[in-house]
Amino acid sequence: MKKNLAIVALSVALTLLAACNTVKGAGRDIESVGSAGEKVIN
Image 1 (spheres, rainbow, N blue to C red):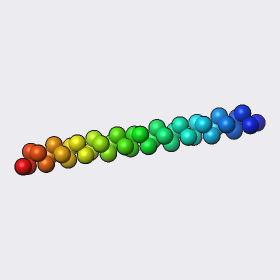
Image 2 (cartoon, rainbow, N blue to C red):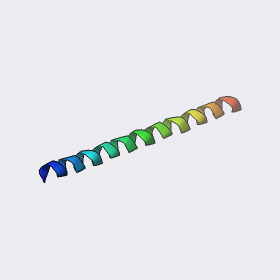
Image 3 (cartoon, rainbow, N blue to C red):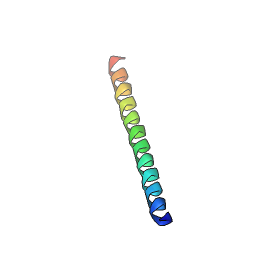
Image 4 (tube, rainbow, N blue to C red):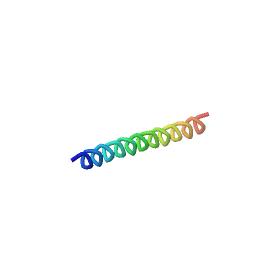
């Protein structure tokens, strides 16, 4: 039973970490688009 609980907890932790990295990457992409647009305007 403890082994199953550990597997579930690890799976949840890995999922949360992957989601965090995805959001961070999307934020970087949006920031780079904003910077490129700003360069075009100036």
